[in-house]
Image 1 (spheres, rainbow, N blue to C red):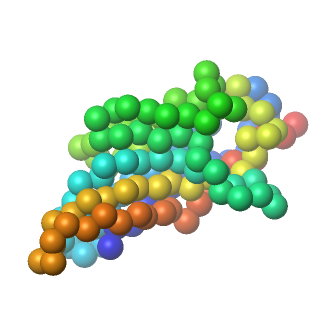
Image 2: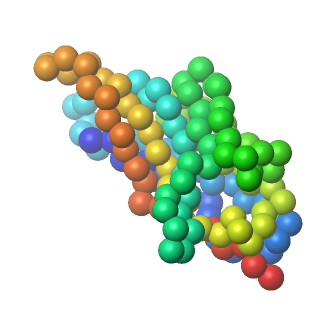
Length: 128
């Protein structure tokens, strides 16, 4: 079972910056974590659905939702099983709970599996 732990959220004034971090680990010490093919950040504003913010493949190809292009940068450190979201010029509409996501491929006794994991979420509040 892969666990995702997020950090770095909080409160910031409009125009400010925050950096979110997420580290993946395998809860069973006897298991390998597998291959994390995609990592990403989603967000859910109050009363709305959870939407993709940005994602990045293990090869470094990234994708952003239009509203954050030019302001947010996603990156990952494959050696640390970590993904980061650097957020600049934050706006009140960026206020939401942010969730880390990882898609993991693993070879087990019953063959290949592809599983989707989520962090518990971290709050980002942008207000004056």
